[in-house]
Image 1 (cartoon, rainbow, N blue to C red):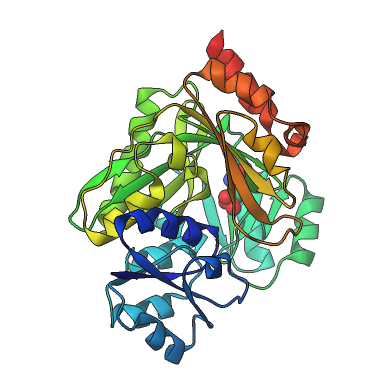
Image 2: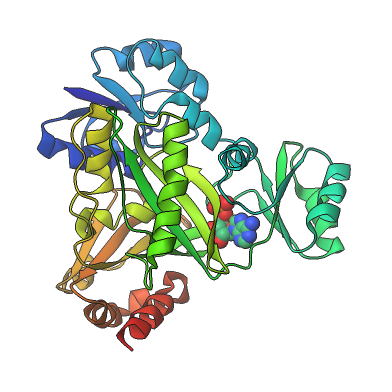
Amino acid sequence: MTIGILGGGQLGYMLALAGYPLGLHFRFLDPSPEAPVGRIAQRVTADYTDHAALEKFSSGLELVTYEFENVPVEAADFLAERVPVYPPPAALEAAQDRLAEKNLFRKLGIATTEFAAVSNPSELDAAIKLLGFPAVLKTSRMGYDGKGQWILRTAEDVATAKSEVPPVQMILERFVPFTRELSVLAVRSRNGESAFYPLAENHHRSGILRLSIAPAPRLQESIQRAAENAARRVLESLKYVGVLALEFFEHQGELLVNEMAPRVHNSGHWTIEGAVTSQFENHLRAVLGLPLGSTGPVGHCAMLNLIGDLPESSEVLALPDAHLHLYGKSPRPGRKLGHITVRAASPERLALRLSELPAFFHRPDFCLDAALVHSASLRA
Ligand code: AMP
Protein backbone atom coordinates (compact mmCIF):
# COMPACT_ATOMS: atom_id res chain seq x y z
CA MET A 1 0.00 0.00 0.00
CA THR A 2 1.58 3.29 -1.11
CA ILE A 3 0.67 6.66 0.40
CA GLY A 4 1.34 9.82 -1.60
CA ILE A 5 2.59 12.88 0.26
CA LEU A 6 2.72 16.41 -1.12
CA GLY A 7 5.83 18.10 0.24
CA GLY A 8 9.11 16.35 0.96
CA GLY A 9 10.50 18.13 4.01
CA GLN A 10 11.17 16.86 7.51
CA LEU A 11 7.49 16.41 8.34
CA GLY A 12 7.12 14.05 5.40
CA TYR A 13 10.35 12.34 6.41
CA MET A 14 9.02 11.63 9.89
CA LEU A 15 5.63 10.51 8.49
CA ALA A 16 7.40 7.90 6.39
CA LEU A 17 9.55 6.75 9.31
CA ALA A 18 6.35 6.25 11.34
CA GLY A 19 4.66 4.41 8.49
CA TYR A 20 7.31 1.80 7.71
CA PRO A 21 6.54 -0.34 10.80
CA LEU A 22 2.90 -0.39 9.62
CA GLY A 23 4.01 -1.90 6.31
CA LEU A 24 3.36 1.25 4.29
CA HIS A 25 5.26 2.60 1.32
CA PHE A 26 5.54 6.28 0.39
CA ARG A 27 5.84 8.44 -2.70
CA PHE A 28 6.54 12.16 -2.35
CA LEU A 29 6.05 15.10 -4.66
CA ASP A 30 8.22 18.16 -4.07
CA PRO A 31 9.55 20.84 -6.42
CA SER A 32 13.03 20.70 -4.84
CA PRO A 33 15.54 18.04 -5.93
CA GLU A 34 17.09 18.48 -2.47
CA ALA A 35 13.94 17.46 -0.53
CA PRO A 36 15.20 15.32 2.40
CA VAL A 37 12.75 12.47 1.75
CA GLY A 38 14.75 11.51 -1.35
CA ARG A 39 16.98 9.49 1.00
CA ILE A 40 14.21 7.22 2.19
CA ALA A 41 11.34 7.07 -0.33
CA GLN A 42 10.28 7.45 -3.96
CA ARG A 43 10.32 11.11 -4.91
CA VAL A 44 8.76 12.88 -7.87
CA THR A 45 10.48 16.23 -8.44
CA ALA A 46 7.99 18.57 -10.06
CA ASP A 47 5.93 21.69 -9.51
CA TYR A 48 2.59 21.27 -7.74
CA THR A 49 0.96 22.84 -10.80
CA ASP A 50 2.38 20.28 -13.26
CA HIS A 51 -0.70 18.19 -14.13
CA ALA A 52 1.26 15.54 -16.02
CA ALA A 53 3.51 15.06 -12.97
CA LEU A 54 0.50 14.98 -10.60
CA GLU A 55 -1.09 12.34 -12.82
CA LYS A 56 2.05 10.20 -12.75
CA PHE A 57 2.52 10.79 -9.02
CA SER A 58 -1.04 9.67 -8.20
CA SER A 59 -0.93 6.45 -10.23
CA GLY A 60 -1.54 3.44 -7.97
CA LEU A 61 -1.66 5.42 -4.71
CA GLU A 62 -3.97 4.41 -1.88
CA LEU A 63 -4.51 8.05 -0.93
CA VAL A 64 -2.76 11.41 -0.86
CA THR A 65 -1.97 13.56 2.14
CA TYR A 66 0.31 16.57 2.67
CA GLU A 67 3.02 17.77 4.96
CA PHE A 68 3.11 21.33 3.59
CA GLU A 69 0.09 23.63 3.83
CA ASN A 70 0.97 25.94 0.96
CA VAL A 71 0.34 23.25 -1.64
CA PRO A 72 -1.95 24.95 -4.21
CA VAL A 73 -5.57 23.99 -3.46
CA GLU A 74 -5.97 23.46 -7.19
CA ALA A 75 -3.38 20.63 -7.04
CA ALA A 76 -5.22 18.98 -4.13
CA ASP A 77 -8.52 19.27 -6.05
CA PHE A 78 -6.93 17.80 -9.19
CA LEU A 79 -5.65 14.82 -7.18
CA ALA A 80 -8.96 14.44 -5.31
CA GLU A 81 -10.63 13.57 -8.62
CA ARG A 82 -8.27 10.60 -8.89
CA VAL A 83 -7.55 9.36 -5.33
CA PRO A 84 -8.87 10.18 -1.84
CA VAL A 85 -7.09 13.28 -0.45
CA TYR A 86 -6.91 13.87 3.33
CA PRO A 87 -7.21 16.32 5.07
CA PRO A 88 -9.95 17.67 2.78
CA PRO A 89 -8.75 20.40 0.39
CA ALA A 90 -11.22 22.80 2.11
CA ALA A 91 -9.00 22.64 5.22
CA LEU A 92 -6.02 23.59 3.10
CA GLU A 93 -7.95 26.49 1.67
CA ALA A 94 -8.94 27.86 5.09
CA ALA A 95 -5.45 27.45 6.56
CA GLN A 96 -3.66 29.17 3.67
CA ASP A 97 -5.37 32.46 4.25
CA ARG A 98 -5.20 34.13 7.66
CA LEU A 99 -8.38 36.11 7.02
CA ALA A 100 -10.36 33.04 5.93
CA GLU A 101 -8.95 31.15 8.92
CA LYS A 102 -9.86 33.86 11.46
CA ASN A 103 -13.33 34.21 9.88
CA LEU A 104 -13.79 30.45 10.27
CA PHE A 105 -12.80 30.65 13.96
CA ARG A 106 -15.22 33.55 14.42
CA LYS A 107 -18.03 31.63 12.70
CA LEU A 108 -17.37 28.62 14.95
CA GLY A 109 -17.42 30.78 18.10
CA ILE A 110 -13.73 30.16 18.87
CA ALA A 111 -12.16 33.14 20.66
CA THR A 112 -9.42 34.92 18.73
CA THR A 113 -7.79 38.34 18.94
CA GLU A 114 -9.66 41.16 17.22
CA PHE A 115 -8.71 41.63 13.60
CA ALA A 116 -9.54 43.58 10.46
CA ALA A 117 -8.91 43.08 6.75
CA VAL A 118 -6.49 45.55 5.19
CA SER A 119 -6.07 45.83 1.43
CA ASN A 120 -4.68 49.36 1.02
CA PRO A 121 -3.03 52.15 3.07
CA SER A 122 -6.28 53.90 3.97
CA GLU A 123 -7.77 50.62 5.25
CA LEU A 124 -4.65 50.27 7.41
CA ASP A 125 -5.31 53.68 8.97
CA ALA A 126 -8.96 52.72 9.59
CA ALA A 127 -7.94 49.37 11.09
CA ILE A 128 -5.41 51.05 13.42
CA LYS A 129 -8.14 53.42 14.56
CA LEU A 130 -10.38 50.45 15.30
CA LEU A 131 -7.86 48.16 17.02
CA GLY A 132 -5.35 50.65 18.46
CA PHE A 133 -1.62 50.14 19.19
CA PRO A 134 0.18 47.81 19.47
CA ALA A 135 -1.01 45.74 16.53
CA VAL A 136 0.44 43.12 14.22
CA LEU A 137 0.16 43.50 10.46
CA LYS A 138 0.48 40.22 8.55
CA THR A 139 0.23 39.17 4.93
CA SER A 140 -2.91 37.10 4.66
CA ARG A 141 -1.28 34.38 2.58
CA MET A 142 2.11 32.66 2.41
CA GLY A 143 3.34 33.84 5.79
CA TYR A 144 5.16 31.38 8.05
CA ASP A 145 7.75 31.44 10.81
CA GLY A 146 7.09 35.15 11.42
CA LYS A 147 7.75 36.13 7.78
CA GLY A 148 5.56 38.86 6.30
CA GLN A 149 4.78 40.46 9.70
CA TRP A 150 5.16 43.96 11.10
CA ILE A 151 4.59 44.91 14.74
CA LEU A 152 3.11 48.40 14.85
CA ARG A 153 3.52 50.40 18.04
CA THR A 154 3.71 53.98 16.75
CA ALA A 155 2.65 56.16 13.81
CA GLU A 156 6.25 55.87 12.52
CA ASP A 157 5.92 52.07 12.45
CA VAL A 158 2.77 52.48 10.37
CA ALA A 159 4.60 54.76 7.92
CA THR A 160 7.46 52.25 7.64
CA ALA A 161 5.04 49.37 7.12
CA LYS A 162 3.25 51.32 4.38
CA SER A 163 6.53 51.69 2.52
CA GLU A 164 7.48 48.02 2.97
CA VAL A 165 4.34 45.93 2.63
CA PRO A 166 3.66 44.27 -0.71
CA PRO A 167 0.40 45.16 -2.47
CA VAL A 168 -1.41 42.05 -1.27
CA GLN A 169 -4.30 41.26 1.09
CA MET A 170 -3.22 41.88 4.68
CA ILE A 171 -4.76 41.35 8.11
CA LEU A 172 -4.26 43.61 11.12
CA GLU A 173 -4.54 41.92 14.51
CA ARG A 174 -4.66 43.41 17.97
CA PHE A 175 -1.39 42.53 19.71
CA VAL A 176 -1.98 40.00 22.48
CA PRO A 177 0.26 40.50 25.57
CA PHE A 178 0.07 36.75 26.18
CA THR A 179 1.44 34.92 29.20
CA ARG A 180 2.47 32.03 27.01
CA GLU A 181 1.89 30.27 23.70
CA LEU A 182 0.30 26.83 23.67
CA SER A 183 -0.65 24.42 20.92
CA VAL A 184 -2.89 21.41 20.73
CA LEU A 185 -2.67 18.56 18.25
CA ALA A 186 -5.96 16.98 17.36
CA VAL A 187 -6.58 13.97 15.17
CA ARG A 188 -9.75 12.75 13.50
CA SER A 189 -9.96 9.54 11.55
CA ARG A 190 -11.92 8.69 8.43
CA ASN A 191 -14.52 6.96 10.57
CA GLY A 192 -15.07 10.05 12.77
CA GLU A 193 -13.08 8.96 15.84
CA SER A 194 -11.09 11.84 17.34
CA ALA A 195 -8.36 12.26 19.94
CA PHE A 196 -6.32 15.11 21.41
CA TYR A 197 -2.77 15.38 22.73
CA PRO A 198 -1.95 17.34 25.88
CA LEU A 199 -1.16 21.00 25.16
CA ALA A 200 2.47 21.90 24.54
CA GLU A 201 4.00 25.20 25.66
CA ASN A 202 5.95 26.86 22.85
CA HIS A 203 8.77 29.40 22.84
CA HIS A 204 9.70 31.31 19.69
CA ARG A 205 12.64 33.56 18.74
CA SER A 206 12.46 35.66 15.58
CA GLY A 207 9.14 34.03 14.76
CA ILE A 208 10.61 30.49 14.70
CA LEU A 209 9.71 27.77 17.19
CA ARG A 210 12.75 27.00 19.37
CA LEU A 211 11.44 25.00 22.30
CA SER A 212 8.30 23.04 23.19
CA ILE A 213 7.62 21.69 26.65
CA ALA A 214 5.00 18.97 26.84
CA PRO A 215 2.74 18.40 28.56
CA ALA A 216 2.66 22.17 29.17
CA PRO A 217 3.72 22.96 32.76
CA ARG A 218 0.92 23.91 35.18
CA LEU A 219 -1.63 22.68 32.67
CA GLN A 220 -5.10 23.28 34.05
CA GLU A 221 -7.84 20.84 33.12
CA SER A 222 -10.09 23.73 32.04
CA ILE A 223 -7.49 25.06 29.57
CA GLN A 224 -6.95 21.61 28.07
CA ARG A 225 -10.71 21.20 27.72
CA ALA A 226 -11.07 24.63 26.07
CA ALA A 227 -8.36 23.73 23.54
CA GLU A 228 -10.02 20.40 22.78
CA ASN A 229 -13.42 22.05 22.33
CA ALA A 230 -11.98 24.58 19.89
CA ALA A 231 -10.18 21.86 17.93
CA ARG A 232 -13.28 19.63 17.93
CA ARG A 233 -15.35 22.40 16.34
CA VAL A 234 -12.81 22.83 13.55
CA LEU A 235 -12.53 19.06 13.00
CA GLU A 236 -16.28 18.59 12.78
CA SER A 237 -17.03 21.66 10.67
CA LEU A 238 -14.46 20.69 8.02
CA LYS A 239 -15.18 16.92 8.26
CA TYR A 240 -11.46 16.84 8.86
CA VAL A 241 -9.34 13.70 8.52
CA GLY A 242 -5.77 13.60 9.85
CA VAL A 243 -3.77 15.60 12.37
CA LEU A 244 -4.65 19.27 12.89
CA ALA A 245 -2.59 21.72 14.96
CA LEU A 246 -4.14 24.74 16.65
CA GLU A 247 -1.89 27.43 18.12
CA PHE A 248 -3.12 29.60 20.97
CA PHE A 249 -2.14 32.55 23.10
CA GLU A 250 -2.90 32.13 26.80
CA HIS A 251 -4.08 35.51 28.00
CA GLN A 252 -5.73 36.29 31.35
CA GLY A 253 -6.46 32.61 31.92
CA GLU A 254 -8.22 32.21 28.54
CA LEU A 255 -7.16 30.80 25.20
CA LEU A 256 -7.21 32.91 22.04
CA VAL A 257 -6.55 30.91 18.89
CA ASN A 258 -3.83 32.34 16.63
CA GLU A 259 -3.71 29.93 13.73
CA MET A 260 -4.12 26.38 12.56
CA ALA A 261 -2.04 24.01 10.46
CA PRO A 262 -3.79 21.19 8.55
CA ARG A 263 -0.91 18.78 9.05
CA VAL A 264 1.48 17.30 11.55
CA HIS A 265 3.27 20.09 13.39
CA ASN A 266 6.67 21.04 14.76
CA SER A 267 5.18 21.54 18.24
CA GLY A 268 4.18 17.86 18.16
CA HIS A 269 7.63 16.35 17.54
CA TRP A 270 7.84 15.51 21.23
CA THR A 271 5.13 12.87 20.66
CA ILE A 272 7.67 10.58 18.94
CA GLU A 273 9.23 9.73 22.30
CA GLY A 274 6.79 11.46 24.65
CA ALA A 275 3.39 9.99 23.77
CA VAL A 276 2.07 6.44 23.48
CA THR A 277 1.44 7.07 19.76
CA SER A 278 3.27 9.77 17.81
CA GLN A 279 1.44 12.46 15.84
CA PHE A 280 2.96 10.94 12.68
CA GLU A 281 1.63 7.45 13.30
CA ASN A 282 -1.78 8.80 14.32
CA HIS A 283 -1.98 10.90 11.16
CA LEU A 284 -1.42 7.75 9.09
CA ARG A 285 -3.89 5.74 11.16
CA ALA A 286 -6.47 8.53 10.70
CA VAL A 287 -6.15 8.84 6.92
CA LEU A 288 -6.25 5.06 6.53
CA GLY A 289 -9.33 4.71 8.76
CA LEU A 290 -7.42 2.54 11.26
CA PRO A 291 -8.12 2.78 15.00
CA LEU A 292 -6.32 5.77 16.55
CA GLY A 293 -3.57 5.13 19.08
CA SER A 294 -3.48 6.57 22.58
CA THR A 295 -2.43 10.23 22.73
CA GLY A 296 -1.44 9.92 26.38
CA PRO A 297 1.96 11.28 27.49
CA VAL A 298 4.72 8.97 28.70
CA GLY A 299 6.84 11.38 30.69
CA HIS A 300 7.87 15.03 30.58
CA CYS A 301 9.44 16.30 27.38
CA ALA A 302 11.38 19.24 26.07
CA MET A 303 11.84 19.46 22.30
CA LEU A 304 14.54 21.82 21.01
CA ASN A 305 14.81 22.73 17.34
CA LEU A 306 18.25 22.72 15.74
CA ILE A 307 18.21 25.78 13.52
CA GLY A 308 21.04 26.89 11.23
CA ASP A 309 23.78 24.72 12.73
CA LEU A 310 24.19 21.40 14.51
CA PRO A 311 25.78 20.27 17.76
CA GLU A 312 28.15 17.32 17.92
CA SER A 313 25.92 14.24 17.80
CA SER A 314 28.10 12.45 20.35
CA GLU A 315 27.63 15.27 22.87
CA VAL A 316 23.83 15.06 22.58
CA LEU A 317 23.76 11.28 22.67
CA ALA A 318 25.96 11.21 25.77
CA LEU A 319 22.87 12.37 27.63
CA PRO A 320 20.86 9.28 28.65
CA ASP A 321 17.40 10.85 28.13
CA ALA A 322 18.13 12.75 24.89
CA HIS A 323 17.03 11.70 21.40
CA LEU A 324 18.52 13.23 18.27
CA HIS A 325 16.68 13.66 14.97
CA LEU A 326 18.60 14.94 11.94
CA TYR A 327 16.69 15.70 8.74
CA GLY A 328 19.57 15.33 6.27
CA LYS A 329 19.48 18.96 5.12
CA SER A 330 22.51 21.10 4.42
CA PRO A 331 23.07 23.87 7.01
CA ARG A 332 21.79 27.35 6.18
CA PRO A 333 20.92 30.23 8.54
CA GLY A 334 17.35 29.97 9.84
CA ARG A 335 16.86 26.45 8.45
CA LYS A 336 15.40 23.68 10.62
CA LEU A 337 18.06 20.95 10.41
CA GLY A 338 16.87 18.65 13.17
CA HIS A 339 15.60 18.55 16.71
CA ILE A 340 16.32 16.91 20.00
CA THR A 341 13.80 15.63 22.49
CA VAL A 342 14.70 15.12 26.11
CA ARG A 343 12.21 12.85 27.84
CA ALA A 344 12.29 12.38 31.57
CA ALA A 345 10.22 10.56 34.14
CA SER A 346 9.63 13.68 36.24
CA PRO A 347 9.94 17.48 35.95
CA GLU A 348 12.93 17.36 38.34
CA ARG A 349 14.69 14.89 36.11
CA LEU A 350 13.86 16.95 33.03
CA ALA A 351 15.36 20.07 34.67
CA LEU A 352 18.48 18.11 35.56
CA ARG A 353 18.89 16.74 32.03
CA LEU A 354 18.38 20.13 30.43
CA SER A 355 20.98 21.66 32.71
CA GLU A 356 23.40 18.95 31.57
CA LEU A 357 23.02 19.74 27.84
CA PRO A 358 26.30 20.72 26.19
CA ALA A 359 27.27 24.41 25.92
CA PHE A 360 25.87 24.54 22.36
CA PHE A 361 22.35 24.60 23.82
CA HIS A 362 22.93 27.33 26.37
CA ARG A 363 22.71 30.12 23.79
CA PRO A 364 19.69 32.40 24.30
CA ASP A 365 18.02 31.31 21.05
CA PHE A 366 17.26 27.87 22.52
CA CYS A 367 15.03 29.45 25.21
CA LEU A 368 16.33 26.83 27.64
CA ASP A 369 16.07 29.38 30.45
CA ALA A 370 12.28 29.13 30.09
CA ALA A 371 12.36 25.34 30.37
CA LEU A 372 14.62 25.45 33.38
CA VAL A 373 12.52 28.11 35.11
CA HIS A 374 9.38 26.06 34.53
CA SER A 375 10.92 22.83 35.65
CA ALA A 376 12.25 24.56 38.74
CA SER A 377 8.87 26.11 39.49
CA LEU A 378 7.24 22.70 39.15
CA ARG A 379 9.74 21.32 41.58
CA ALA A 380 9.05 24.05 44.16
P1 AMP B 1 2.28 33.49 13.37
O1 AMP B 1 2.99 33.50 12.05
O2 AMP B 1 0.90 34.03 13.31
O3 AMP B 1 2.36 32.15 14.03
O4 AMP B 1 3.11 34.47 14.31
C1 AMP B 1 4.45 34.17 14.73
C2 AMP B 1 4.64 34.61 16.16
O5 AMP B 1 4.43 36.03 16.27
C3 AMP B 1 3.64 34.00 17.12
O6 AMP B 1 4.05 32.73 17.53
C4 AMP B 1 3.64 35.03 18.24
O7 AMP B 1 4.79 34.87 19.06
C5 AMP B 1 3.77 36.34 17.51
N1 AMP B 1 2.43 36.90 17.21
C6 AMP B 1 1.68 36.68 16.11
N2 AMP B 1 0.50 37.32 16.19
C7 AMP B 1 0.47 37.96 17.36
C8 AMP B 1 -0.50 38.79 18.04
N3 AMP B 1 -1.68 39.11 17.49
N4 AMP B 1 -0.17 39.26 19.28
C9 AMP B 1 1.02 38.96 19.85
N5 AMP B 1 1.97 38.20 19.26
C10 AMP B 1 1.71 37.69 18.04
